[in-house]
Image (cartoon, rainbow, N blue to C red; front, side, top):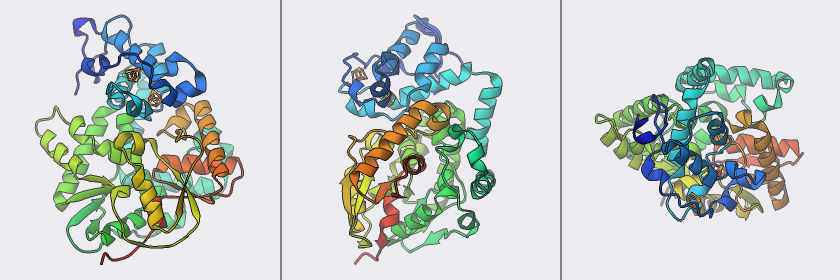
Length: 412
Ligand code: SF4
Ligand code: SF4
């Protein structure tokens, strides 16, 4: 994977992966992806369009430009939502290209900035105790309302942390049958405990022993933000953990994580000791939305359905979200904005606050216009971003993961 090279005239920087030439040349610059790109739709700039971004990668590959500030700005402004990848008729694998391009950009950042980002993405997020300590700090500032004194860019996309829930012991083993591991994760573990518990119940209802091992982050954010070595380290740790459990399946309730984990085979493809194991474990990963969970009806209300980009674009999961909402008895309602990205995109609300705020408010208004009093949303970043947007516009809409709407029953 560490394929950085300056050979053949390419001006990629050493020390980080680079977008593959075979991927770059697939783009025929047709522009069919442009209407699907949120950043292009907001700005109308070619530099904020997938075609422009791939052209910038091609310029570096062909030695006509370097990985400079202009290149970094174009890659940083991308949401990595992969809507362009879904729309592209030429099969340009944009998701892995932007990850590699960002790893290149990371090399150009000041050592202090790179070190801090590496510390957060590679060290803090990979340790459950560190994430919990951070969550306690965040929960206290939220309970005392001190967070209101912080800049909006620091707080807008932050999930709400419930300190009593954080203190409660989580069930880590439930049901009977073959073992299915449930990813503990990083943010899900500290800020979305009810979703974790609902996932355990859903997996058990599907005839498995649901087991949640101690380890946390899958490495998705590290991969998305230019730290592939940290992502690889976390992937190896999680794979070893799931293997030790003898897990027949690995169930994940966060779109960004399930999309990333299904790519573990690609992430570790050049590691002879891990490639086969990564490939085998990736094949066992299931997003919880892909489970057909038997459930009692809990509501007959209309529920708006938000599609996370990493479900629709990364995994082709769309009908499954509506099926799970309908399994709760609710009537799935479409949000009238053509499935536009909510602007959460990992750390986008912190790093690109203006663009993120515009997308957040647009999504919140569209949800309010749907008339539903609940919105189903299966990704922690989207859930926090949408909840913040709804608060901003004063809309009283509950944000829930689809699995939380279920009341699982034994399969007959
Ligand atoms: S990424 Fe695909 S859709 Fe977009 S310009 Fe290139 S070939 Fe066309
Ligand atoms: S990943 Fe999303 S924001 Fe980035 S170029 Fe593709 S469509 Fe645009």
